[in-house]
Image 1 (cartoon, rainbow, N blue to C red):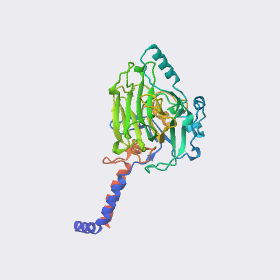
Image 2: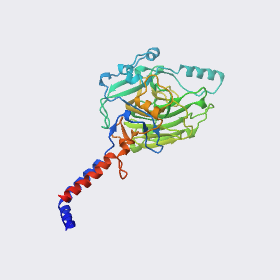
Image 3: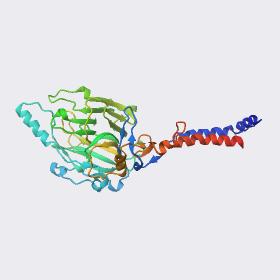
Image 4: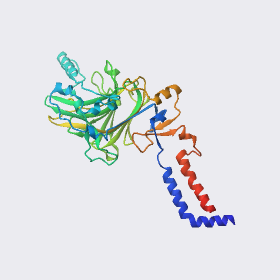
Length: 405
């Protein structure tokens, strides 16, 4: 009798029950709840070579309208090298605690070239003209509104290079932390402009000899086909000028993308290899000459007229435009520009990662979600995490209540 009554109730109320179940399934597919970095002991990345890191940083250039403005190109080599920052943003703690603008030039390389040529020696550079990096070529500008709608924002950071008569003016900045030991660095960016330029995101540790250099590059050459991106674990050539093909991967951007389109570029450097992703798709992995020692992160936009960059015509320019940069990393030294956080101190005291977070399993770029430890695992039942567990049991309880009413 009870069974018949229950069946009758379920028959009449089946549409309501199915609606509840479907709503529950939709809710159960939501991303985990965003948490503060202070609540994370470490961060685990996804992908084919997942790894753990201790520190998370996010730099958002999409809402900086008060600093927006495109500076004129400075026409003199000395003046552009000694130019002030393009806006107060690049003098603020938000910038200087983590990044440093560069103003070096390649005059030493050109001088060495001349000496080698006079002595009849092989030279490793074929630069054709002076390259001068300038703080004036890194600036915040208003977005043009032609993005893909993925949280494009009002502003972006631009790095510019331009041919100015007998020299090339370029842009570069580097991380103030010099002891980054394995990392995952990402940027949402695009490259635009005339042929003869290179835009890049890379790690670099110099050495007195070429063979000792440790460098992982993501490079886009504006003279290349619109879908081609180059990935290299340097050096890609020997002191004698011979190529090292194992060091390089020529990749095609996925899903028909072009480097002039907005895309999320990601470089994961782990002890075994360096892996590259574009919009979440793995496009290259290089184990050969994988860097071993602590390093820095660099971004630049440049040309020197050599065979790698190509020659840019006088008056032309190219830009690397960036909406945001995000990193998780381990660090072997102390960054004096930035005091340690409470999370860093807690990690040092515990010596283990109790609460694991992710920057890949969130739907809000720049944020972290707790995926293991504390709330992330304390309420796990039948393999379900806290929110999923809740949305699993609610419909069962509701069905029971309806059936008994």
